[in-house]
Image (cartoon, rainbow, N blue to C red; front, side, top):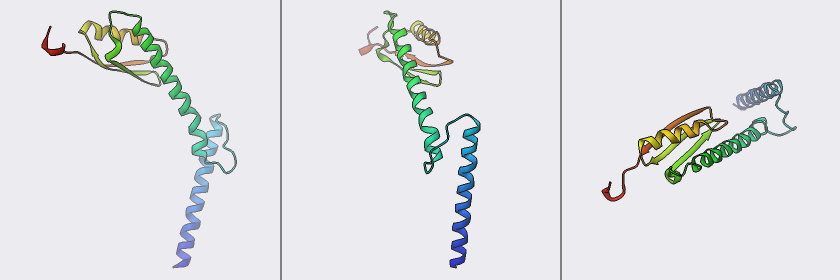
Length: 130
């Protein structure tokens, strides 16, 4: 029984070592920096791009909000913008259908936007007034 456990442990260790070596070589071939000795290859290679992507997404959201706020006829307070790698999603409400289309048009015109998913709806008037 002890021999079987030892054999399983040895095989598992070899598989992990080979996997990490192959994964590390794949990163070096793509031009990524090599991980320092003793560091986890997964943590070293994935931490920097994720932070850069989130930073770019936040900057794109700010550009879109700024572009929308230049149009005084649009109330941007009920509109939320999410961005991921240039793909933008608009959520919330607008006063009428013309504003829904206008906000999508404005967002699509911002540099860095690759696509716009318009989920805006027309808001209902407060207290049933029209």
